[in-house]
Image 1 (cartoon, helix red, strand yellow):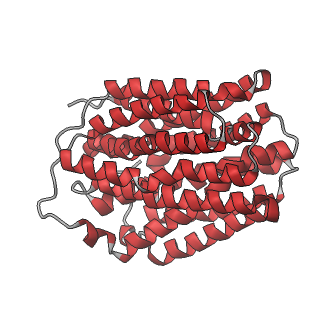
Image 2 (cartoon, helix red, strand yellow):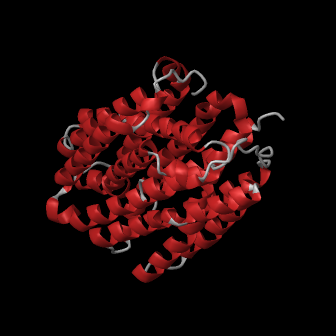
Length: 387
């Protein structure tokens, strides 16, 4: 069965186009609606918190029925439908309820689509990064376009833009074919036996720390830049630069992983994450430092993500792939992101932006130590089949 390259790529494009509209500018929208830093942190945490439950629930269902695209289509539709509530309500309680509702479905889609993509690719898993880079392209298009739009029009337009991209995401999901039938491992292995391995537990803790460190970036980076008198257009440019560097990395990921192990890539990427947060913490008034920090997004998100996806694929195999991706979404993206958003919102004004981003660097330093001690030691072989 031929790989539906453009349909898979289009889903990533619209999914991350939604993120490109939401992540850089949602904090500004909430601030414009009259919410303070603590409330923004809480709403950002709610947006992420559903990842703790939703991916696991939908992942369990997907592995039971073997039809992940059915779940992806319904989740994408419900996310778009519920997000329209932001067009009519801006009170804190209503925003909280709508956030929980739409994100419960939206956060269910990506982990299942990651698993479906790997099943479609089969033995051609080296093509993953070339498909995933279209998500980065979608992010760039919208982060630049929306930034330019918001320089000329009120930020109240933002929910309409995001609703349109969510609708596009659903329409593309309708066109993606179901992955081929799954062939479970010859000797079934219990999911808890996989999870209890020290290397797997350490992997999840590392992912949690990395995502917690990224949360103040996602929730407050645009506010941080605005407080230092950067224009919305320049904000969009800085966000886009980070994703452009990510795309370049995705293009060269296959030869990189053919030369270095997943473990080596992960350790170097985490070290660069420490450097990035320190640069943002103490270089706010130096545009050259901020530009350099954004280039490091290729490591702090791009290469860590690719390494994590392939490590998950190895750890959980065919039998538990949906549940493995769901656990990664729940524990790392969900719990880690929620804790990072809550704590940064709670202490943003009390400690100041430089201290918050410095704490992010410390969290990444701890993640590096855990990864060095436990993660990927059994994967020291070269990863010729990945990319």
